[in-house]
Amino acid sequence: MNLALRYEALMDQAALAGPDAGFLLVCVLCGRSPERESANRCAECGGAVDAVHDLGRASIPSDGEPLQRYFDLLPLKNRKSIIGLGEGNTPCRPATDLGRRVGLPRLVLKIEGDNPTRSTKDRIASLGLSRFAELGVKRFVMASTGNSSTAYARGVQAVAGMELALFCGYRFRHRLGYPDHPSVSTYLVEGDFVAAGQVSRRFAARTGAFAEGGFFNLARREGLKLAYLEAFDRMDPAPDAVFQAVSSGMGLLGGYKGALEYRRLGRLPRVPRFVAVQQDACAPMAHAYRERAAAIAPRHIVHEPRGPAEAILRGDPTATYPYIRDLCRESGGAITAVTEAEIRAARCLLAEDEGVNACNAGAAALAGAVRMRREGGLSADDTVLVNLTGADREDRSAPTRYRVVPPDWATGPVDWDGPAETSREAAGSWAG
Image 1 (cartoon, rainbow, N blue to C red):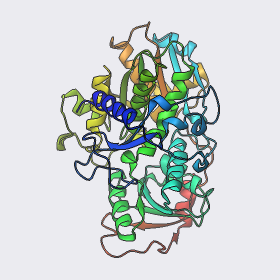
Image 2 (cartoon, rainbow, N blue to C red):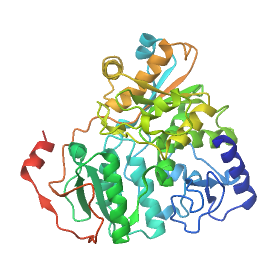
Image 3 (cartoon, rainbow, N blue to C red):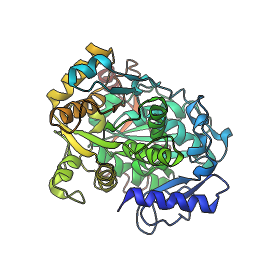
Image 4 (cartoon, rainbow, N blue to C red):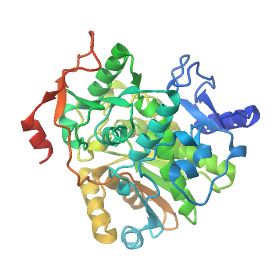
C-alpha cells in the first residue's frame, strides 16, 4: 500500500468526477465507493473509507470558525448541518526558550489543550455529530479511554434528539469527564480498551444502533486534520517534521491527508516528515516498525497495557498500524517510543519554559522530538511542529450513573434503555 499514491489518484478521480457535494466517499485501499454513505469500512476489502475532496472547488477563508472555514475540505454537504462545540483556533506558537534548551530553535507547539474539554478530541465530536446529523443518525455507540468519550458525551448533551451509549474500560473510569444526562448511557467494561470496543460493537449490532467506528470513522480523521491545517496556515516557514503521540494514529493520518491536500493546493511546499510517538510501556507500533514488520504480530501486542500516557494505551493496533506505518515511512518520518522519565521531563520543560500544561500524551510527542534531535534524526535548522493533543482536565465532573458489564456481555439480547446503576463509592473515587 502506498498511501500517497493512492490519495493522489483518488484526488484526480474526485476532480474528474466533479461531485455535487464536493467530495467522493471511497476506500483508500481499493478505490471502491461504499454502498452505504454511512459505511466506515469497505465491504469488499475492509479498507478505510475516506472523503476525497474536489480540490479545484476548495476555497479557504483567512479566518473563521474551523468547520465553516475549512468546510470545502470536510465530509459535509450543507453548512447548516454544522454543530460547533467551541473547539479549534487553538494557539500555535514558537517555543523559543524551550527550543533553545533542547537544540530545536525552530520548535513550534500546537496547543490543543485549549479546546473546551482540554483535548483535541473535541474536533472529533463536533464534526462527528455534524455528519451524524446529515446521515440521520439518532442513536450511536462508541468506546474510548476517556477523551473522545468526554467530548462526545458533552456534545450530545447539547444536541436535541441524539443519544449515545458509551463504553469504557473500568480502570479508565477516572478519565470520564461529563455529568449525568438522559441522552448518555455509560457502560464500564471489566477489561481494557480493546475489550470495551468489542462489547460496544456487539451492543450496536444487537440494538441496531450506529457504531461510531473509532479510527475508521472518517469524521474523526477529518476533524483531527483541522488542527494541522490551522498550524500549516500559521507557520512560516512550513514544518519540516511533525510529532504526535498515537494510539490508533487517526490524528496523524488525518494530518498526513491534510498535508497532501495542502501541497496540491499550493499551501504547503512539501509534505513534512510525520513521526508517531508511543510510550515504551505500550509501544506495539514502534516495536513492529523497528522490526520493519508490515503488520502487527502477536509478539507486538501488549495485553493489559499500562503507562503514564493513558490516552494512548492501545495494546493491539492491528487494524490501524499498516496506515500509520506507510504514512510515516512515505513521508520520511518514523514511529518511535519514549520512556516514562522522558515523558515527565518533557512535561516539566513545557511548564517551566513555556507555561504550557500538557497531558502525558502531549508531553510524549515533545519527548519524541527531543530524543530524535539527540540521536541525530533532526537538525537545528529543522522547523519542528509538535502537536500537544491535550491537557489535564480541571473540571472533575463525572457520571455517577452507569452499568458495570463483563467483557463477554451483549452476546445475548440487550435493550438500548437498559437499567443504570449508581455507585456513590465509585463516583467519589472519580472525583479524587
